[in-house]
Image (tube, rainbow, N blue to C red):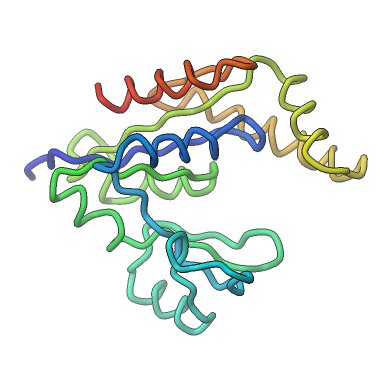
Length: 195
């Protein structure tokens, strides 16, 4: 099998670490990158266009699963399903483009074990970047400063964060997002993607 020139870059990290800021900057600075939309069964919010999501019904989502058109999918808070469409990724890699996707650890597991990306003889190139906080307390402070949160919810989020942090070691690259140094973090992510 011939390796394609393009690649899929997965950006991961716990909630509050700065992934969305990094992604927003990458979109602004790199129009040559492809940022795929997710398919979702959640309702469209007021004023929301179709630039971030393919909004589908539960029945349509079932068809996507049955026809193996999703690279990965998961049930997210509230019971809505989200999935990564193969058509939003593979044709772009085949065209030599860099596809950048933010995923959670569940999505990462599905993608890295997918037949398209698994092993040294994989048909498509996969690169994973894990964004780390300076320390655990920095992340907890960011979570609690975002919005009022109950002690139970905080406990649940910390447990989730600790589980997610264990994935850093299986990623190709780990980048620490130091407080007040987001520009440097973005530059480091760009350097890794360019490599």
